[in-house]
Each structure stands twice: as C-alpha cells, then as structure tokens.
Image (cartoon, rainbow, N blue to C red):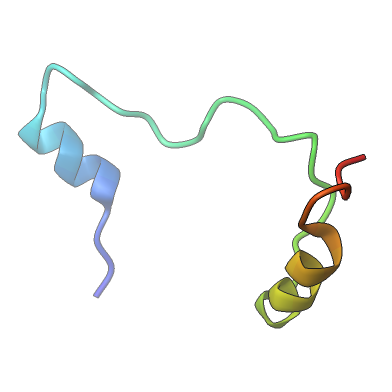
Length: 52
C-alpha cells in the first residue's frame, strides 16, 4: 500500500502546505555508489591526510 506523505502532511497541517519536488536539481554529485561499495570507499578515502 502506497501513502502520499505530502498529502497526509497537508491534510494535518494546513498552515504548512508542502509541494512535491525540491525546486532545484543537485549538481555536485554525478553518480551514486552501490551500497556494497561503501565500506571499501570509506576505508580508502577516510582518515587523516586524505582530504583533497
């Protein structure tokens, strides 16, 4: 069963109407890593002296 959370919010909080969509497009990320790859990515890129 699907629930429209925006509709539920708008029905319960009429003074704080929400609209779908963020109104912007993210530009800093060009892709999303697979969840299985995250541990290796963190091990490789995290820690002292790793910031670039």
